[in-house]
Length: 125
Image (cartoon, rainbow, N blue to C red; front, side):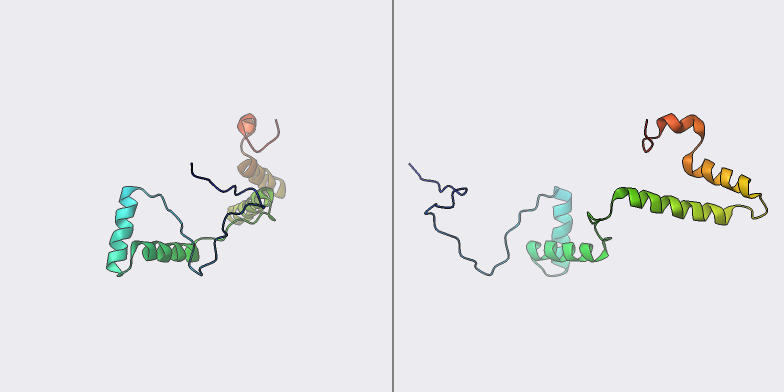
């Protein structure tokens, strides 16, 4: 019978793995076509598959937009987007229009026609 150490038990007598200063191993599951593309890229750049994946991920992270932080709620993004839309609509509208007509048109474009208000998922029911 083989004994398996209990990893949840802190009093376990199993040997502790020493840090080897090597990068941790990560498995990546990719479709065959993507693996072939990575292999072709690696060959063209004289790299191993592992080094090519690392380099491609680094390049992708450099050009990717920053991730959303948990400090910014999604609602503020929606508010900001709506403010940008209102600004663009105001810029496109005829400045000779009366103020109330301009506001009506902006409201109609940002909120949508009243006959579709039941279908909106961002409004309370």
